[in-house]
Amino acid sequence: MKDELQNRDVVDLLSERHEILRRLAEDKWNNNNNIYISNSEWYILGRIYKNQLTISDVTKDVDFSRQATHKFIKSLEAKGLVEVSNAEHSKKHKVIRMTEFGEACYEKNELYKSEIEQQLVNTIGEEQVANLKNILNLNWSIEHLEV
Image (cartoon, rainbow, N blue to C red; front, side, top):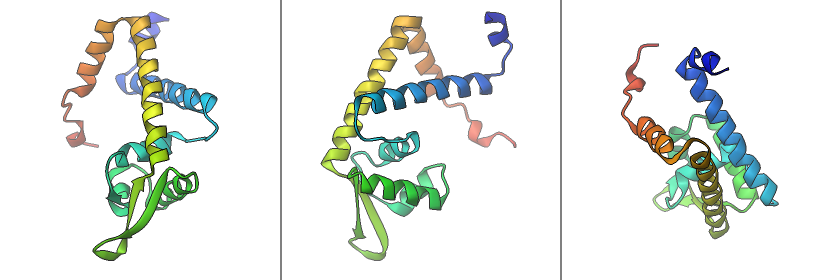
């Protein structure tokens, strides 16, 4: 099995580990709370945490279609996690910000992710997790690779 994993390409390995960790985080939240929040909704919440952005800015910052982003924001608003209001200096733009409830949920989820990270430390070791973080934080300059 180990040799099989070593022969896999880095893109697939990263994708699989990301999927496992995201599913763990989503399950940890959903098993301990009465409000379902999808990974896509968490992604948007992460972009607006402690910020007040226009919906247009959020749409540019996430990797979803404009329509999907609007759908997720409406869902977050219906759950009481965000508020959408008119921008002060523009009737055209809408501003999105987290409610106190949304911030509390986001911060609770950050604690859950810390617990998952600690489980990872317990499994593969603190040095390995630190090395992994260092590698992931490097500037890979991959945005400029040819497609």
